Length: 263
Ligand code: BT5
Image (cartoon, rainbow, N blue to C red; front, side):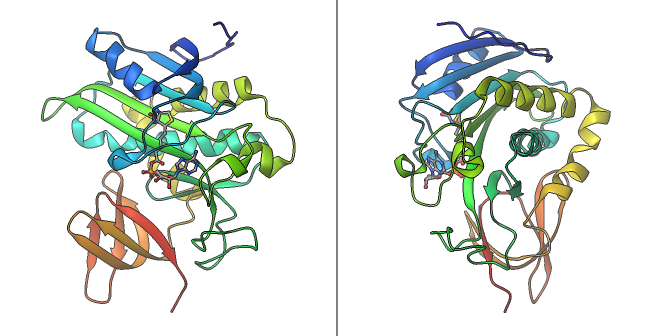
């Protein structure tokens, strides 16, 4: 299956009408020694979210995974996930949808309220409808990334009724069809630009901060070793959420973040 991709980014594009998971495919390519490939699919039959959760990916999405071998220390790898969130947000905004980022990697619409529901159409009560999610996988030495696969799932031209509760799509938000090629191209070009060099990576955190709806909010993060509740004050070093609890200032590296109402 072919899709003409005018892409101003240093990736070759492998397009599939239907595939199990673009991340799985990118990992296969990584095992074969490939690099700088974007695997793009219209539909996925076995896609995954974080922690092996199911990702629902019917036809009409922008489901893609970018395989690179960046020459950076492993500690900087989280910046690539944040860069993908920035790139996705910018592509959504270009498509006329006012998206924003919830730490670390959810792209939401309608999340500007004070915790809880930002508007009537927020069935989760979590302050936003999920437009896109990101799953990063990597392999490397202790101090150097080997390969890195950043998988982005965007509900593009999809009826939200067919998605899990709390999800939305670009077509639903803009009340009209989406140019999915253009969306994918914008996303990939922006991601390439943000990750092109160490200097470019230095600009990821500021860009992420500008687009985040988590900073300044009360949050609860469920981590592998318990939950942390407090005010999200910053994102730092590189990609941890800095949370002020009543007792201390903590850095949270991974977990599920929920926006809370102010006390
Ligand atoms: C994510 O996980 O948000 C990461 C999703 C990454 C998907 C992309 S698609 C291309 C590439 N190939 C793959 O196989 N994966 C990547 P997480 O934060 O764990 O969120 C998962 C949760 O979101 C699920 O448990 C559902 O509740 C919900 N969910 C599932 N499908 C959804 C969808 N299409 N839109 C919104 N929410 C969804």
